[in-house]
Length: 488
Ligand code: GLN
Image 1 (cartoon, rainbow, N blue to C red):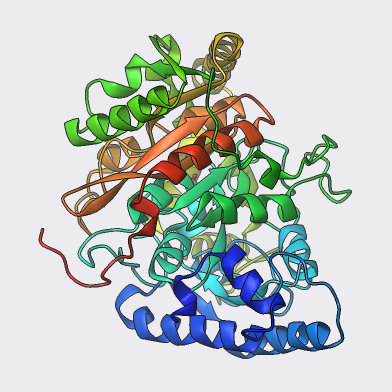
Image 2 (tube, rainbow, N blue to C red):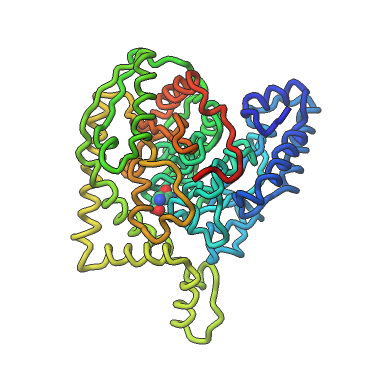
């Protein structure tokens, strides 16, 4: 039996039934990790020793007859912008190459309390800015479906690791699509929760009004189990709202009868690959056959999301990243004069991060604030408003997660607009604070296609139910990537 192929809920049964030990489960994933990592390079740090220790502790608890929670003994990975005490947390940047947190992020702490086992920290675009993981300061991660293609980004390491079976589930962060887009590119499930659903204490910020952390997993059920653990208020993060956390697994029922699905036309127009659009429509038709009611409608603000995002996100980033000056935080250049030290230290940041800082400071500067930042915020209000109206008519909205399947490595590093456009379908959920899930719904050119389901704030349960219903009727999530070079 290949343990690394099993979903968390199956592993849990084997574990509590005494058929396998947590150490056997962890060893199986670590062995798989060692097998695929030379090709994929999904990790920045592998925490093998820690993982085995954590697994051993679960076995001890089981021997004592303790009842184990559903994710106990399940190996997971964390994007490298999520702090773990004593383990390097680089954020994909040379600026934080030597940073070792002195505290745990709340979401890591909660997973540890649930007994999950950390196998490593995954590669990402520097400070989560990017869509391909090629902007990592350390190395490029490859897509397990075709090693010549990108895994998506910025949580590309997490997505590649899960798709290849190097960990059972992972956490990513999503500011404009960084959980859902790599999940779509690697053929797994990714959830960006409602803004305020999940604590960000200990998660290194990119754009604070947009950032959310969330689960990446092979199945909807596993994603729901992870969401159960990480959701909810945190007294250390005032943006983590007090809204009660339901048991998300109670929504895992295959039923969409009477459900109203809205399909925004703008997400199927120019720029969307015909095979992608066709796969999503096929998925929508399947849900319709199962009893959902489907209606096309127009989301007129759709074309403004990209512009609004690329003002607001860099503006917030420029402020969040101001602390990396070599004095308060981060790498310090060895120079005698103060100004020289500031400028030389900042130069260790990669070109994309510097570009965003410049864009952001420009958009916030006195002469341009009204023309750019203020305008973008006004657009954001209209975007939110239009979604609010849409959710008065529909229970969920369905769109492609990305306009195309994973692109070739190197294809877009010099064409940033094309790179930015790969998030064109995911940005709205961040701007409007909505929950959204991406799940596998087809293949094109041998690469996975992702379907995005959006819900109103705190309707994670509803989108999980629709996703689960779809998953039960399809086989896409049962496929494993070859981890080899595909045909381009
Ligand atoms: N690709 C988008 C960007 O570069 C989104 C990144 C993210 O969600 N962290 O800003």
